[in-house]
Length: 302
Ligand code: GH3
Ligand code: MG
Ligand code: MG
Ligand code: MG
Image (cartoon, rainbow, N blue to C red; front, side, top):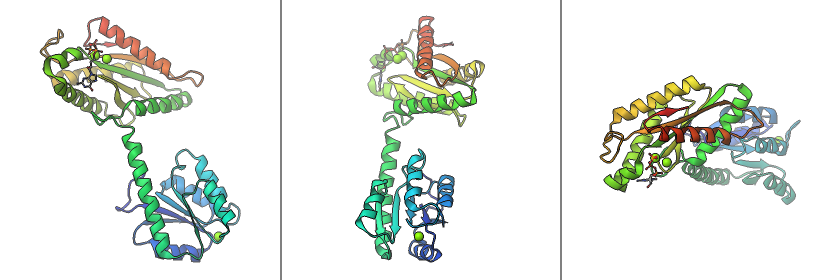
């Protein structure tokens, strides 16, 4: 998923022949922001630096040919989803089959027709846009608009892996709204939904550090993933969250906690180890949360 530059999508043109690059440049320069590479190695470097929306790839090039470039792109988890269109003088059906087998979305034989090149690119970019949109939506919670369980699981995996390299501690906050069943029962489910949205926005704002990741874990439970945060740091963040909730002062007529919506937070901190799964840290946060509930709610337990 790439931001559009000057409102234009970005295409990387790869061809060892400057005349081909020139022709493609003429064909595409009005609609797209173009980058160029005249060999495979530069193509891979520019692709990972600038994450293009599409790559137009020649096959016959000295040293590293287009097929090899394609294999490298597909092996890179960040670049593998960038659509690749081969554009080549290798016009035999067997050549086309190799290109498609490698994962290219389309194959254009030279000499090319500029209109057809433009249209095929337009179609592939539209498909990519739809795929990106679906990928974004599948990671967002429908009710609150913040990341969902799937996104949280991925973030936790990612930060666990990163933490096992950096050996910096990773903290989790498991956050649960107190007496929320009673809130629904006394205020109604729609008010309950509004409350969840408000809490979600508050969590998003109070966990403002760019590295922090907060999402809806399920029901009225939220999880915050705090990379490079030790136990003391996690306490500070948790206290801020509790304070922000107190400031919100959402009325809860049925709460034994004092007529306002409150939350309980369980904290777990660890230095990630490659041989352990991050789920163990989740379980620790969960049992800390359980103790916070038992000890009276509206509190933090580590
Ligand atoms: P505790 O203080 O122990 O956490 O008690 P609780 O009532 O908050 O916990 P419990 O697990 O008994 O109830 C959770 C409630 O959250 C029940 C369920 O109806 C409500 N809930 C879960 N998801 C939603 C939702 O999307 N919308 C609304 N309105 N309510 C929800
Ligand atoms: Mg060539
Ligand atoms: Mg609850
Ligand atoms: Mg709960």
